Image (cartoon, rainbow, N blue to C red):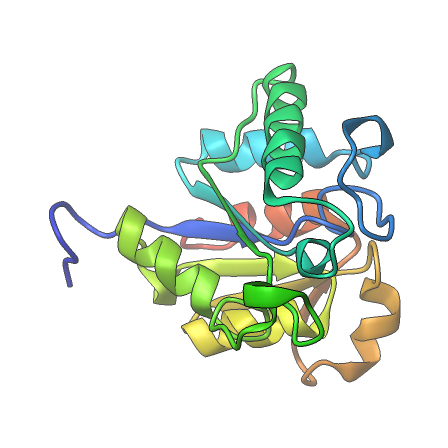
Amino acid sequence: MVLGSGTLKRAVFVDRDGTINVEKDYLYRAEDFEFIPRVPEALRLLNEAGLLVVVVTNQSGVARGYYTEEDVDILHRHIAAELAKSGAWVDAWYYCPHHPSGRGSYSLPCSCRKPLPGMLMEAARHHNIDLAASVMIGDKLVDMEAGIAAGCRTILVRTGYGTDEEVRIRPGSVVCDDLLAAVLTLIHQNDGV
């Protein structure tokens, strides 16, 4: 199947807070950002394997008035600069600024807030991603639900909220200690993803 022009690509969708960086409530300042150990290495391995790396993150702090969309963009540029020091990169960043208890237009119903698959679907349209050949990695049940709803395989990591969330996911789901362990699991599978 081909969407637009070119063949479909495989992607790894990655949650941000609790998966890439240490979980801190409503993180938006670069000075508060801290990678979970071995994350730059994990993302570099995905890059070297030729997989698209797409971050998909709920950012309800925007809707709640704690920070702005510009703050989110600034933090993402900071993360990208830090990753570049390790030879790693993120191909695309998607975030949902909405929340039902948010302010103004940010409180409107949306299709992007995980567990809904809107961010993954939008990324698939923009980047010719084969969702069935792709994977969603995150530390929460909502990440798993968004991945499943989009037709992706899923991996829960035990960082962030993952240890607590593990008891809530489907029996037989893939669970790894951290992002690097999840990436190594993917790379060592027969099909490479």
